[in-house]
Length: 503
Ligand code: FAD
Image 1 (cartoon, rainbow, N blue to C red):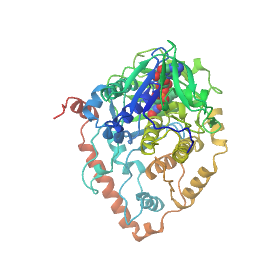
Image 2 (image 1 turned 45 degrees about the horizontal axis):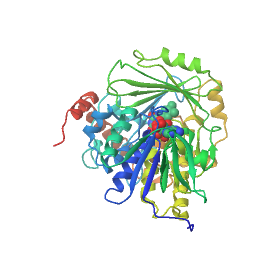
Image 3 (image 1 turned 120 degrees about the horizontal axis):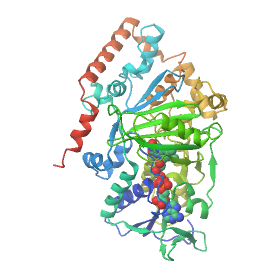
Image 4 (image 1 turned 180 degrees about the horizontal axis):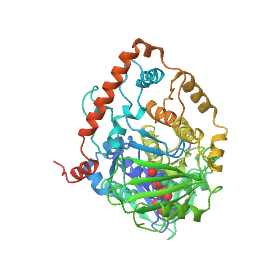
């Protein structure tokens, strides 16, 4: 511990995008009743990125920890439910698969369901994997229900997340945080002030005012005003593996049912997202500028909208990678300032949440605690790396035509991923690391969906005869299908939820 360390009383968050207001809400909630103060500085003139609209199921825990009511949340952020992601054309044009939230089938004899599915495939008796997914069977019917029932009920094997309007979410969290005493300062930061030992001591605004603090959270987005511009934490560039570096985003009117899933459609030099909200559909084309001009990307996106565009198309540039030290001195980077892995699996907001949760659990008593800092940085690195590898898997296994797709199919990939793919291919086993946010079923869905079918499987699957196995699989499939047919429409569940008042 450094001699100059002092007790932390004033926490200053710089930046008021999704990261800034999530951090403000969670820290104010965690420290409510203590003497610590939380303040936030943001600049309306600079604005926020605001395109993060799709999430993964972990977001439910964040809202629950803050005591946020689901009905309030849906109403205020125009949110919808999300059961997973449909990947259209990612292996080849005309083929699609689904990455569902929640598992496949039912684990049996102490091992994962997919080994029995692989056995049925070998016996020539299996239906496509997606027919054993409750989430996909509900999603393809535009139906939804909350997870419920005991382990034998297919609905207990359902996971869900949300799609929401990012600007409305930031506003919602701002009201929540201000209600807990967070003080907001408006203004552009023009200087990051550092003490003699190098710790950040304050940020100076354009109007000359200095916001002093003991501990800083850098939520300034890609620029990394504190963590990089002042503290030079360094950036590890991962664009050799994740070469998309640009996007164009535009909302449009919805034309069709309210689907409870995100769609990702492979395109010439990247992919296009479709995210249905209550009041509009979010669309974007994520692409590599090496293979496509901005104008061509914009034209392609606009020509494929399902309804009238509701705003001017918005261009975005980014470099995939991660900050080498997310926590340096008395400053922690949260959000885009800590790295960005492109939005393919909607992980960015989760990485914000995860950084905040880790920070709260490792929060130091004094400004400089190297042990906690090292632990935090190691955990964040591990998490970024597992997300990175999961994203690379989608690109690496493609069988599409075109220069962009040839490049990502041919690229060398990290050793850890090579081993993972080889083990799966040989044995059907998916080995997850402790901090892997993706379940075994997620890796399975993408690997199988991209055409990687294992040669081997768990030997316990052979305790069932082919006939017994086929019978069990048929029963599971039927139960899922019947359950899906009986579910309410997603749009009706959204309407019923937002019209519910707190009891
Ligand atoms: P920003 O939104 O950029 O906020 C930065 C804040 O810092 C702003 O308030 C700004 O005013 C302030 N600031 C900056 N400089 C200064 C200064 N000098 N003085 C004062 N204030 C300053 N994530 C998902 O989870 N799901 C998705 O579907 C998804 N889709 C995405 C699609 C694209 C194309 C991109 C680029 C990102 C996507 N993301 C997604 C990521 C998501 O948008 C971000 O994680 C999220 O918005 C958090 O951003 P942020 O708060 O870190 O930064």
